[in-house]
Length: 450
Image (cartoon, rainbow, N blue to C red; front, side):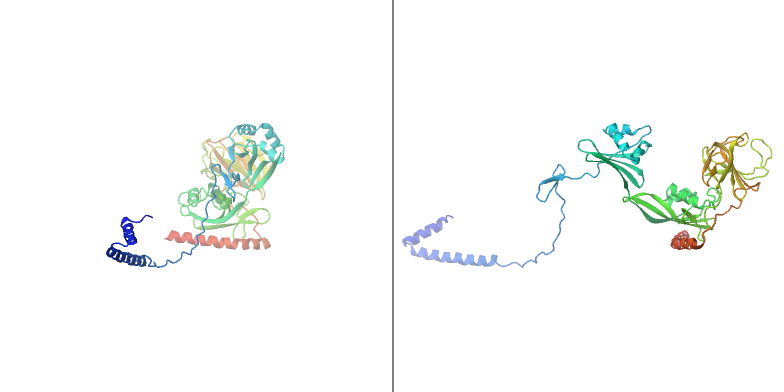
């Protein structure tokens, strides 16, 4: 680095020995500069307090870097194979009038491929019977050829068809369904369905609840404001997503202050509902053989006939319901008459055990024939207004030993209760469920007082 001019001149004077006084002044000046430098050095080198070392280790999990085309990078940074696309299914919902070969053409697949699929096994042959609302899922490969197809056989199984090299393979895949136990309660303000909705129940669950207690409670005529229900039931999940409500495991219904309880129990012949003492909730006969809107005419030995306009005994009950409403066999028995007459219209008579006969009049259509065995709850016809009828309704009679009885008040025969070891097994299963119902009822009563 070039020195300042005044230092260069001083050096020159020293070198030739001239101007000695000036040299003494320069020596003093130089010593002063040296002393000043030392002092500045001491000031700048004063050490700062040492900071404590930062010892916490942070583990950063960084996302994998992907190039724009979606391929992965291996450990060396080279491009690897394409990431698997797990959501490449194209779904098609079958419309009315649509055929499977039309769906295949729409997806760009040949009809000959469809014929090969249908010929694989019995499951694939069943694809010929598709219905509106069915869903088919398709997955194509990079060349546009069919890679896989799946179809829901039911809510718990898929039929999967896929290409394995040069051959087609069909297999049934099980979809895991998990049941979780839930509980709810409700208070009736206007109707059972409204209360059920407020309690988070589906329409189907409300119908199940009504069917359990339907032999003891008339859910059209007997329900009162303030009636209560408590349920322990299943919620079904499929592949982590809610599917639907399952079975009712236990229930309490308080109707006009009277408590009814039911526990679901399978005693070998299929699951049924039993009272806590082992009595079957199912009676030998339904109290009403249809879901009706109201009773348009009750049991009356001296009723004025609405068409004939004269006193004529009304030996049954008229249930008003929309035309076409299904009518069920009130109990197990044999059809002894299925025909048509000017007065009764389309009608069905059923003979039961213990000299009991039930009669159903004014059908639009009959669904059973004379001599046919029927089970309780089986559809035997639909509501109509044939014969001497002013509007759509069911005329229902209950005859015991040839004598007409009021269907709403006649004592109904009961089914045999559980006994012995089966009763013990039932009570063991019922105990924790009854405890849970009791807790729910206590909470419901406490909330009502609050």
